[in-house]
Amino acid sequence: MEIYDIVKKLIGEINPVGETNTDDKRFENLKATINLIDELLLDIDKVAENKDRCEFSIKRAGEYTYKYLEQLTK
Image (tube, rainbow, N blue to C red; front, side):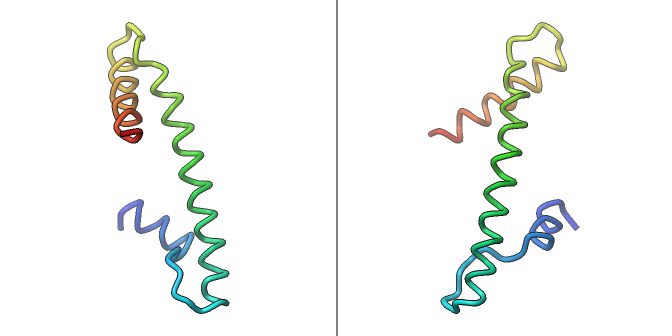
């Protein structure tokens, strides 16, 4: 089982189906998913701040995450 599958199982479905009770639950799941993504992006952004460091491994991680964040804005 992949991390994605585990998170989906923990949070639940997010796609609305047109039934109020189900969609209310899925809306809460959607909010939880967005909150998780926001927290993960903040973590990634902190790593991206290292793109100009001189230590190879720190710089590599910073450059990798910086490029990832750049492509998100395109």
